[in-house]
Image 1 (tube, protein in one colour):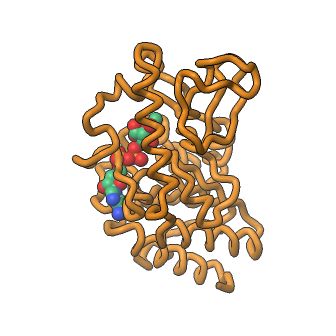
Image 2 (cartoon, protein in one colour):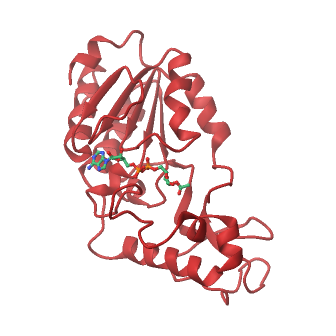
Length: 251
Ligand code: OAD
């Protein structure tokens, strides 16, 4: 684990962390590609494409209503990986003259509940809805259905989950691209690296001279400089505690 520190080539001015479903797995939110994953009993086309929503909006609303309800249930909360990231961001931003960017593919709010700020949700957020007509975004805790009245245009049926479906453009890309070009250390946590553009971020960071690290239960085939395999709740706190000591941050 400490070996990566000796491989850092230049002073750290900018750190980018990309998280995927694996960071929330130990909080009880199934990953996408596990056998008990979110898509079980539903094809992606049915519940995660604009065409699926057009064809059967009730089914799609119900699918995300269930996910939203589960996320808001008492049993679900941030785990030690989310907490370690939030703690590191806080001390890094307080004590170090560098930038820290947290990008997530997850639509849950567990990073925020652990205390992370300015999280870039590139695949949207489960606890938000969006008006099809105006693009306005609203907080959304209650179930949505085809009779939900949009708060901006007052129409029925215009509200959709604020989720990036297949075939749609991910969010926050200009900010993410900008942080990748200045990145010195890129860390991907709990992502299979199968969905673009997120899957290509580590290569973009590498091209700009960053050291790239993967933390995953099972090492992926991607060509990271450092690959650490194990549970995020175990490795993430250890990794960021060592990084904080290396940078001389008081914890
Ligand atoms: P995946 O389900 O594809 O991958 C989850 C990764 O987390 C796998 O590589 C697992 O090995 C790893 N993992 C599982 N449990 C872990 C743990 N406890 N600690 C560390 N790693 C663990 O999820 P994503 O890569 O996030 O997109 O999927 C990317 C996108 O595909 C999602 O955002 C979603 C989906 O289609 C959209 O909804 C647009």
